[in-house]
Image: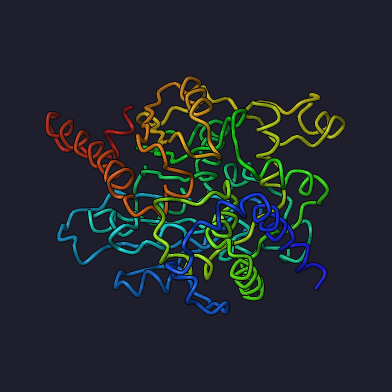
Length: 430
């Protein structure tokens, strides 16, 4: 019971402080119109396979083992009834943010969910579940109740989880490269892989980053102020696990305090502000599937980026840094090594709160080839990249267009080359 209270303490403290600071503004919101007002606080356990299957899409579960022994579950949507093409499908790997899982991309359903839309457009869609999440809590030697299991941040996700998953997907599909879409931490870990393991650049066709928390000097996230002191006191332990008791308790507290949208934001460890675009009917499903579980080192590593203003590896402290890195401060990630087959596409907004436009432009300036995509809606925030009502117009359609354009350009180049040559063979010439 003591361990359970420690795991849920960050979100409960966050709810309390946000309630105190937002009580006046929140009292003006008509909560009775929100679906959670009519939902009992007991939530049903729902899985990604349940969600995908309920919409009549085929789904596969693949097991990936990393070099350091973590066992990941990766979901695949190999086809769609709306795809009539018999040609081999290009592969797309989708990665979630912190506190999320593959579930995060599926909540909006076939009409607005990027994985479903990509499958409809004849892409072979894969959704990773990074170590420590509800679907990836196994290890070859370690049990999840051991502290040693949780000694990782998004650095290890980029160094181990992503490369192992990419290798598995390409071996399974007999492809040489794939497309990548990441949200929030899914962007951070991707840049870790491409910079620290540059041999994987040639295996990535397009890289699309939605709200990337890389440089955080100008971040306005409330999590830094409220949560940082607590996280700095904690060892590397599991936090915010997917647990029916936790979900029910937090749902009940949110209902009592009347801060349901703020609770939703805290479930994703965002800035805690009410989203104007979020489909509130998704809240019960969100609470049933989130949070998915994290290591306390993950947010602590982000807090370090905020404090330093740099994109660098985990800071273990003066003495340990020297033992690990042979220098007193953590080394910066070599972003100049990030050179996939095409430009890095970065989507960002002014009202994100977690990610500042100034920091996004700093990131773009340090990448060899980046294309920023500015969301013109001034009220678009960090959660909207996944859950907004108008997500198709501002995110999904542009993302699919980027991937489609790349594929069409490659086919056009093949058409201009005499003799038979595959897309993968052409990419190997880059």
